[in-house]
Amino acid sequence: THNRFEHSLGVAHLCHRRTQNLRQCQPQLGITEKDVMCVAIAGLCHDLGHGPFSHIYDGQFLSQVREKERLREIGDKSKIPALPVNWAHEEASLMMIDAILASHGMEIDKNCLDKPLKQIGDGLDARYYGLPPLSVDDTEPFAPDRVLTSRDWIFIKECIMGQPLDDASQYVGRPHLEFLYDIVSNPHSGMDDDKVDYFARDQKQCHNTSGDSFHMFPKDAFVAWGKCAKPEKCFRCKHLVADKKMGCRNEVDDETKSLTLNPRMLNNCNSENDPRKLHLMICYPDKLLIKSMDFFKTRFRLHEEIYSHRKAKGAEYMICDILLNADPHYRIKTSNPENFPNGLPISRAMLDPESYCNLNDSILDILKSSTNPGLKEAQDLIKRFSRRDFYSYVTKEEINDTNRKQLWEKDKNQIISELCNNKWHHDNCGKKLSLNPEDIIIEKLEIHHGRKEVNPVDCMRFLPKRDLHLLNAKVENLPEAKCAKESDYFCHIPRTFLKQTLRVYSRVSEKVDLLLHTFNQWLEYSIAGDDAPNSIVVEEHDGNNIYEGDNILEPVSISQLSQTPLNEEHENNNNFSEVSMEARADFYDEYNLPSSQANRFRKGL
Image (cartoon, rainbow, N blue to C red; front, side):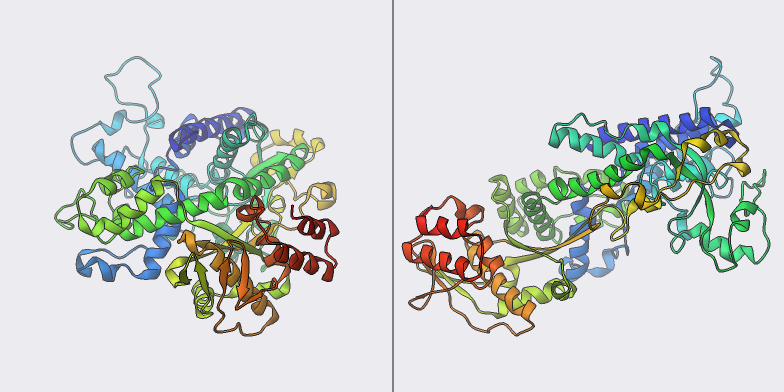
């Protein structure tokens, strides 16, 4: 399979090609060779901040650390820094860029944005740090337009974040070239070169396709005016509303590179409160309309079939538990031993570049070979993980109507508590089992096409073929690309753009059947709005039949029946007793379900 290094190289290549195409096809935009280089560097460095095992670290792991308040278990709180709020791996990418520059003896100087980087020690001379020289004379410093300045590196960081740094009201790097920020991480529609690359790689590796289905997007892109798709979240639109009252104009100061407002942005507002502002953004010809819908449908399919596959998620939850158990007992050395003499725990490694570099996928091997007695529980899980005995998927319930919306609104801990309060028991070879909160994992899975319930293609802007010749006009006279009408591609629009599913996993393999029946019983009562029974004893005999006392239990719901005898665990088991077969067949007849299923039970197939 591919890795993030290969992916980063691919994103850098796509970013360079797209920016170079824009530079050649629309020279009036004023894109320079250094701009092309900076966007490519942003594509190369955008994933530097990923922790071990991809999104497990910055997603499930850190959220559970916060939820469980692991600081109380680590020891002296004063020596452990607090977790950053709403931390994302892009912030670590910016930290790693600073660490790379520091290793070369340089740092960004916000007080001298348009000069070479500040020298902070032995290393490279910042005057020679930039684009390759045009001449072979190495004795002279690079020309100012070829040296990477502090402004250039801030621009690279802004491209990675997809927004201004430090909650600023406008971009600092290239405020007059805002469309360049759409290339690595597109804040308008989500159609960017990062996704183009990993969609292609993941499809090739997992679906054995050609992997180049969306290569036309970087090649056919152009810059035009377009109305903002997210005015309520767009920092520029909020800034425009405030500054419009002051009558500002859009000009770039040659000295400070600061941006005021473009008259076209203001004049296209119907009223003072109209949030629909025009941006210079990456747009596409309308011939790519259907392909754009396919792009976002591919996102949905990849998340459903690969990234959120139930087996993969079972392994992810186990890795997360390993890290959670090891976090209070394992320390990673830092570049600042004065502040952290004992190192940082796994959950705080992102606060120090050296610690973060030392935290990678090999952490499981390091923990496995450790002699620290506090890691015993984590090591037991690692052994289980090595045997591929992952947490077991139990069942799911899709949230597709009003009655089930109330299930989605319930807190996961509340659901677990209600399942455990039912006091179900299960006799498995003479051993009675009961459910405990630590046995159950409830997952609220949301899969969408890029913008939750909204059609993501509505956030893109298209230009008809008859207007493409206008792309050679001056910047202020460039055409306005419009949102496509859904009637132009209605056959390709999904019925819904958001899929919500409750999924249940068991940490204990022996309790899968017990948890399955408990969840189905809880689901039946929850949908009906009744309180679930507090004490129900269920025993299993003959390996398959479920009894309460001496009587066979009738299935509690259609969903339970469809998932219990016919799921993967039971489908290949043909030892159903004749009594159980007849009971299930009668159930199908009673509810007018397909006769083929009833006959299947009666024949004992």
